[in-house]
Length: 157
Image 1: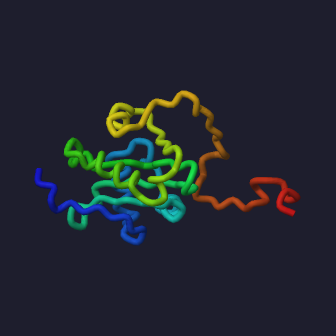
Image 2 (image 1 turned 30 degrees about the vertical axis):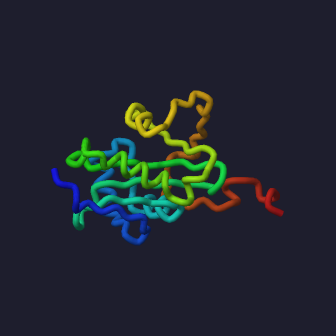
């Protein structure tokens, strides 16, 4: 397959949420149930957000969150199944890693349950010391919580 016309973008405004939702349903078992509203919030709070395009068709996506110096985490790496095996996933992750918000942090984390070998080829290592997780609420991420719902009101006084 000729990939010379494939385009990478790190512009938030180019993210097509409906196409992203379709891509998640097609190639990301962990994100099949995500809503447009929830994805909009995740995108707005991530930098970089990198998308991969074949013309007007969204074929890849990854995003990161970072404090810019100590820690960053890469999220939601997905390539359309029709385009896998051509190095686009590797280039997508490398593009996120090269972004100014990620490239200078001490540690970059990535959570995955099925593609460890792929990420190890890029330079990630198994990390058994980071094993804690907090499951917040009932999973309804589209509902906006107020600060008073999260912590006692006297904490911020």
